[in-house]
Length: 571
Image: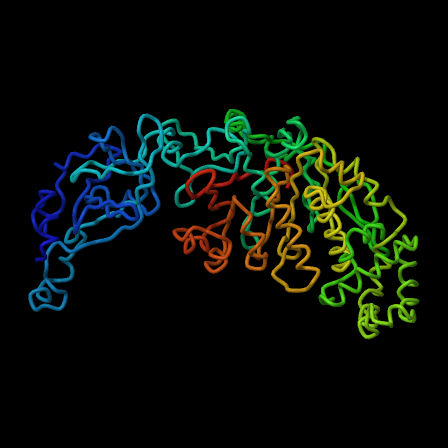
């Protein structure tokens, strides 16, 4: 037999080839003892800590579970996770040896092997605080399951309160300790204790279709409603957050209504939610704003306000009529034409069409300001039928509704499912651009001053359609605009919530600004692209609906969560 195997057997007092004896003295919550199969080590970069698992405990351990290792000489205990399980031979017989072949297969059972659990130390709990693991556990130390909610909260460095996201879970099931209650997980949200609330460092909610993204998003946004934050650049005044939700599937307007399922829950469950600070019930401040497109009709919310995209917004955002086909040279020409058009007193899209027709023949453009072929190409791209159907449609102009849309406590929902794909892109980019430019102080206007007064959380569902990797001039401008806005999110109180089933198509520069990632079931390749921790990338494809990983370095260790089975608003 090898030296390492012999040492392990001798250390644990086991007889070769015999099962572990009950004399090991394990309590109800104790799973095994620290063992040395090859070495017991701890360094600044890695650890080699293993636990011997006796037969009586082998069916009670699983990868991902949290355990505690007493470290009395250091005045604390190590909080760890089971990283790997393995079986080792008790003896050195080679599987192909003649002696081994003489042993009947029916006689070779589990007792012929030793089970070891490799432990990943996460933190050192000392006097109720989580510290870096600097001390190594002693050989033969008893290892036990976590015994209290405090151990989990301290060991994983969980916030005591904040925006509720779900319950701390292992292998799809919430951790339930002595009290029987699950352990809530919050996103830090108290500016008095932590400085900048993490909602303003941006959030990604990603997962394959059918894994519960909208359910999770609604529950999260319900917690954001009513939050108040200090405006750093406005004398420290405290203002209530304004949610602006871009809704491509006509779902978020339902946040105004109660979920009748909640009324059927046991009173004890509702009391638990209240005790954990979870907000639920319909939001009375939801208002629905519906873009008008000629020939299209909206059906959804029972009450809504119709609006149109005024062509006047193109003065600030020329790319609204650029489309995805305009290259850099053509876009430069378009900017020049838009500038000249508005300088000449133009206002509406129909007028711009006439201006563009006339510009084709103007000598000053032919003379070299814009090449004639470039003008022809622009004409083909800008004079599209769908622009006539979306601009200046006789409803309330978007830039004149700013007092209703942007207000303290308002939840402003923009459903777009009824629009054609081309019109939807114009509408969504117009709203996104207004928020981004106001929060980066890129424009002087009444609507921009209004938006700057409040904390704004902008929710972009199907974010991969707008903050994309595509290399067109329009896409580059949008991405640059939102990277700049995201970088100033803490200071200017802008939070982005990006929701997508295609995280691989969201621009990397935008993703790099996202601090908190809620990742539901998705393929391993997508999990890596979405920024999932390595230890969860292979598991995420198997996550059922509502099971997720949260990766928020400023908030806690990466861990698994279980969302609520019921939506906190209508869904």
